[in-house]
Structure formats: C-alpha cells, structure tokens
Amino acid sequence: MTIELSGLTFTNKADIVPQSGADQILNQGTANTLDGKDILIGTSTTSDFNTVGINNYYGAIYTGDGDDIITGIMDGWGYGIQNYNAKAIIDTGAGKDTITAKASTYGIYNIDATINMGAGKDTITATGGDTGISNGGTINTGDGSDIITGTATATDGSGYGGIFNNIDGIINTGNGNDIITGTGSPGIYNDGPINTGNGNDSIIANGGFNGMGNIFLGGQKDYLKGFGNGNFYGGDSKDTLELTSGTYTIGISGTTVSFTKGSAIMHTSEFEKLIAGNQTYDFSSLTNDQTIFIA
Image (cartoon, rainbow, N blue to C red):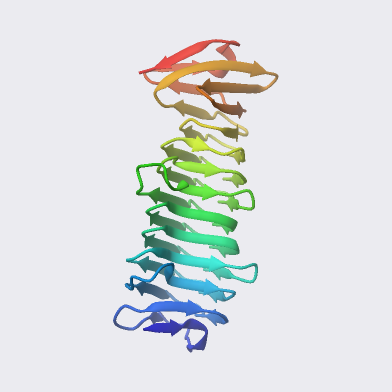
C-alpha cells in the first residue's frame, strides 16, 4: 500500500505514519505534520526496479518543531528516501531530529532538492549498496552538534561511496561540534562544497576521499581523517589531519601543503598538526619533497 502524505490531516501532537503496518510513503503535494514528536516511516518491500521507501517527488514535507523521526526503508533495488526536483523539500524544523534511510542502491537520493533540519542535535544516517547519501541538492543541518553518516556496503568500488556530494551538491552543518563520516570506496566523494561551520568538527572518510570539491572545517579545533583528491581548509584554531597508511610526498606552495600518493593529490591549507601513524608533525616543520611513510 502507498500512502499519499499530503492527503493526511495532522495535529500538534505526536503523529505517526503509518499508524500500523509497513507502507510506502509518497508525497507530491505539501504535507505539514505541525509541531510534536512526529514519526514518518516509509517502507517498500516490492522487487520492482527503483522503488522507494519515502518518495518526496516535487513535494514539500514540513514536520515542524519537535524531535521528529523520518525513516525510509527499501528492501529491494531502489532508494530509501528520494527527495527530487527543485520544488522538493524536507524540513524538520527545530529539535533533535533524525533522518534514517536504508536501501540496496541509494540510502538517501537528494537531487535538485533541499533537506533542512533546523537548529538542534540532528542526525542523518543512510546506508546503500552503491551509495549511502547521494547529494545533488542542499543539505542544511543547522546549528547544533549534528551527525551525518553515509555508508556504502559495496566493496568493489562500483558505487560512489559512503557520501557522494556532486558538483551541484552543498552540505552545510552549521555551528556546533559536528561529525561527518563516510564509509565506502571511497568514503567521501566530493565535487561540491562541504562546510561544517564553527565548532570542534570532525570529518572522517573510511575508504578515503575523491573528487575535486572544497571542504571547509571552519573555526575551532577540527579533525580530518583520510586521504584522497580534493581541497581541504582547516580554518581558524589548531586543526589536525590524520593520514592513513601509504607513502606520501609533500609539496609546498605558499600556504598550501599537498600530499601525493600515486595519482591522488590532497591539497590542504590552515592545518597545524599532522598525524602519520605513530608520528606527529607540525605543519610548519614539513618541507618540500619530504617523504612520509605510514605502515
């Protein structure tokens, strides 16, 4: 069964959709669940190609203030949550909100669309066979200590990794002690901007980075783990880069310190501390053409 969300009536209490069972959620209009601790769970168990747990297609979903939960599950070949088209928006308002998605292809597929989570300690968790989070739109988690986790379960490199932020994608986590973790092959593939704002932020790429986008860690003591193509800016305060195993050649040009391993080049600026296995270095002590080996 498929539930058209915009056709339902909601209250300022804790609304739950569906009230029982497991149904797919479709939204092609405007659905406003009002304030309250609302729960939306869309589940698709069909074996049809490209089916979706929650399909927000040209629609708008507003869950208002409160600790809201949105979950999309696709047991077959498709998407956990699809948020598609420039008119499409998922807005959870202020509160400690949670978005969770799981599917065989893409956990979250956010293309030309917007996800706004407002102020609060928000969490996005998505798992997909090819890609955990595929973003070609805008993801704003607002101020607060937010957590974004994307996991790709494919091990053959056939997908785009744990988090794929394409050239049209923007990820902003706002101010707060935010954590972004991508796990896959690569962990994070970034061709657009990722900005974590001020706070003691962490970005961890289990499986490395790829892409030619920019990652801005903002002010305060930030932590970046992983290696791969891209441009990385630590921002103000004492920021740390931790590299994984391999042999790296250092290149220095002005304020940019680059690390090369094979054909991959990682360009960094505004970092102060390097962790290389059981060794630590001050960035100011690194020299051009220096080689660092990490077992």
